[in-house]
Length: 347
Ligand code: NAD
Ligand code: IPM
Ligand code: MN
Image (cartoon, rainbow, N blue to C red):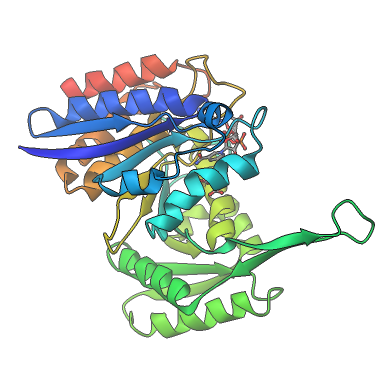
């Protein structure tokens, strides 16, 4: 029987609750088809307060040997600045394992009604995940003085832009064959004009896929007004980050948005995590919606080659929401929603 070795990083706040819920469902879904051998790493803001770092110096080396990484959420701004916690754990993992494609599906689950009552949409957002606005280049000079200047340099490489677009076109080819590239090339005249040019070059390799170019501001409106017209969206790191919280909102909330940080070259493990964060406002209350996290777990199984089990988990999530379980904020507890998904798996 195949055994998969998983590194679990529950992290902070509701990250811990939703990771527990996810593992319960994944183990039940695995039945006797394969086994999941999970090692839990307590890397978090609490770990930082104790050790002065978010993960040990050889943390990346340790993660290398696993088949996949599952992460709950990281961040506890009351005690550790986000700029420290995220740059000490989540962001370096994405970069170190060249998880350049962040896949975030947005569609309505049965029984869920988003605040905009949007219907009939099925969007796959492909977010560039290793460079761009998150390159970490920049700095501050004359700190605290009147002439202080802060820069945050967005770095776009030909290699990075080509590979994310190619990845997006491959996804579009396997879906409804439409790709929308999102930029801000009317205002950002170097990086985004370059991105538009690369999009046109790569598009020539995919004559069966139709392409639209949209500016990020117009896309934000489009996702609210007519999300059903969209198929695959490819966006830079920051734009993709913002659009996927918007995508989560039209889905009914952050509790429904799943995500996969994929290393397409398989030179290292990929990482799976919900789109949402540690939600300090609801942490420890057993009210976080675990659906986004469980769906992300299903994406992990699919990536590992267990597509049938992944599909069964999705069906179980849909069976639960179709009965109205977990469909509205606060309607059910984390444990109730998990129990309903487990029951649907057994049915
Ligand atoms: P957040 O996603 O944690 O929360 C935003 C809002 O959505 C909150 O009102 C929260 O209660 C609600 N929410 C989020 N997930 C929910 C769920 N599963 N069920 C029900 N409601 C849910 O975003 P934030 O408040 O901006 O960030 C909190 C912390 O998390 C910060 O430290 C931030 O940097 C971090 N963060 C981490 C990740 C990650 O690890 N991938 C992602 C986003 C934010
Ligand atoms: C996400 C998060 C992270 C990001 C933060 C916490 C650094 O918002 O995964 O969407 O911006 O990538
Ligand atoms: Mn985000």
